[in-house]
Image 1: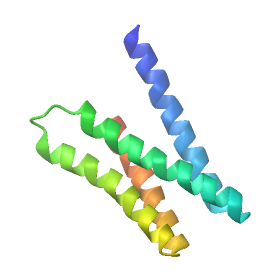
Image 2: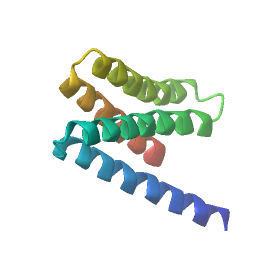
Image 3: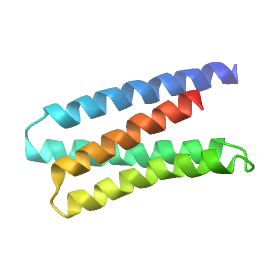
Image 4: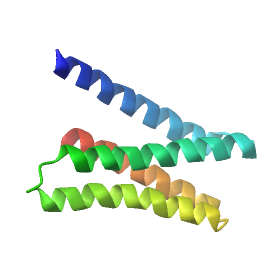
Length: 106
């Protein structure tokens, strides 16, 4: 029963990730785009956290990679703060995509 809930959670994470990344690059209104950026960045950090905590403590290299994907999202937030929006969006999108791939397959 618990694995069914976990698979539903993974599907929800994947769908929300795809939708948030698609909207991040298509919405042109600045206020809505900033909200979508924050949601996508927090999703990247959350996925990184889930990936790190889901792995056993002796999988050090995998945990480092999972943490790095979360840190890329934090770097994207810093880049947005430095007014480099296009680079920030790409970094956050990379963080979410690779975080979801790592969460599902590794």
